[in-house]
Image (cartoon, rainbow, N blue to C red):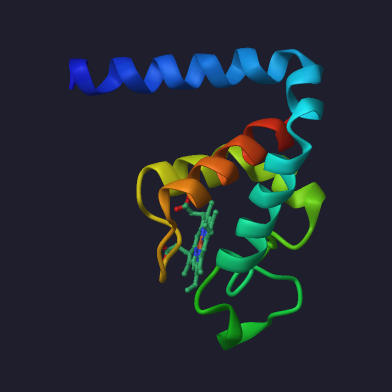
Length: 110
Ligand code: HEC
């Protein structure tokens, strides 16, 4: 447990530092847009304001990741769900997709 927690904390604090300087986020516009594209391709299949009822495949109401304001508010939850392997519910993320999405979410949050 101890040894598994330490790398996570390191990654997490690096993420916080990275986002502290706003230039870090602005400098990676390409990564930001590919991260946004991953959310669009891999998450909004279920998590979209355009989908109702059964079409959401069980994705909770309010978790509509086609809305950047919702992504910003739920960025931490989204990162945890992905890093802990709960999401995407179906489908997979390549290592590159995961990385660009994580960078996007780090900078999307408040
Ligand atoms: C096939 C449909 C589907 C896809 C694709 C999907 N989700 Fe979900 N999501 C769900 C369902 C269903 C739930 C409700 C909880 C559960 O059943 O695990 C959920 C819940 C969540 C939650 C809240 C609960 C939790 O576990 O934290 C988050 C955050 C989330 N999803 C993020 C994402 C992200 C980020 C992606 C894209 C990488 C994604 N989801 C892709 C169906 C999906």
